[in-house]
Length: 591
Image 1: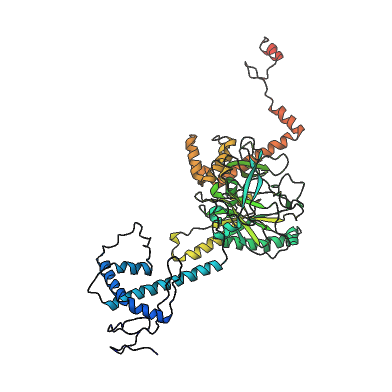
Image 2: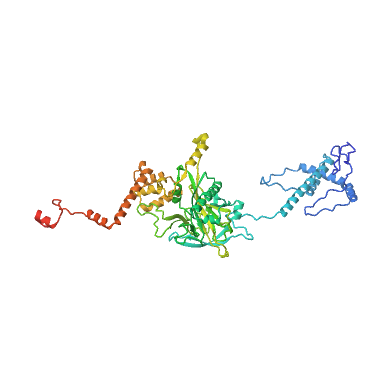
């Protein structure tokens, strides 16, 4: 039952020694003072009730006077200066320090009861704060400690099994184009991905979860039914995955490739030659050069000229029973690559005695994989990552080209690498890669309220043209430059370099042609560079070439044509066929 004040009959707080209403002094219901904890974590001894009562009675007057003096002096102290940093709070004083400071003050006009109440309130607040901190500290100690996630620019935090390895990567020597092996550190990217330190848009690669309905046997089935299953079911799965993780408006699957060193087609020249099953590509490379990427986009019939597009790869383990133990794929962080100094243009032949470019007009002949490789100039700055023990329900996405030159993840160089520390009896890697094209359609302000309808209409009209259907694929800059060779504006060897540089820098075809004509002092007429005119000139050159080839392969016709083309010598006097007999009979002399 609560006690009542003898002066005003109001209920008293049992922790207070004076009535807060009238100030009448009453005996404490609990004679023991609250426990105090010293700043050195030493707990004060709690005296027995009788001893506590005597201490309170003896020291009460002294404590009240000390509180009065302390409050008086504290009110006369100058204002505390502003700390140098606004976000740094001044240190909180303990109850003991507060009472000591108050005891040094002197104010005759302050009330005794208010002084004592203030001291007790300060003590209570400090005890509550101490208990809260103690509970937080205990919670942290009981929770499992998580290792600090490293960033791409920092050294990895040591863990029990970090999977970081040192492996040999085949770079390319710019002068000789020969492979140059370099030992590099390949870091485990899983903790970085989990902490958000890497992502597809910035670093060029990411691992995303997605199951597939196809079995290992389905991927190797090359029958018509198997191809149909892969192209209809798996392609649809990958389209939805890429749409979700890139924000593209439309996705086209360009090609797929199964890789397994133990089942590869040995009749092919190299890992880039294709076939039903190919080997591992153990050289640092990109899948496309800039020019080749643009030619792939021209297959998107109906896309507006200034549409942003991106080529991307989706790489998956297809083994139903095993993770990837070795010869996995590593990606180089795109932010650690210098576009100007690290690239080496390389054309990998896809068949024996392949010719990559036409020596007549500089056109690509489609017999080589036109790509970039990396030289060793900045090998120490390149940051390599991989995802160890990839499962079948995980997909590695990495960019191959972005038409926007301001993007940091335009080319993701990659390579398979062999870890000699792994047990060589483990199952061989089995994987499939999908090459796809993402289309990003910008909305036009002039579309107004019907922008969604217009956008959807444009997207539905964009279709992927078969690579062999040359008539329906848009005219490329390389084709226009090849016609420029026929018009004596430039040399055949310049065509590929100009087309590649223009694609890398994101230049419009018409701007390149105008600048080239101005530089070479050739009159620019827009109608001469129309797509129909370009196609006609290329077809005419093609027909002429075929005619010459047929003539050279037929010895009889070749001899006849040579006889017809033989120049007849004429007499300089009369223009008749010249000979010694003619001069003697007609002109009476012999030269």
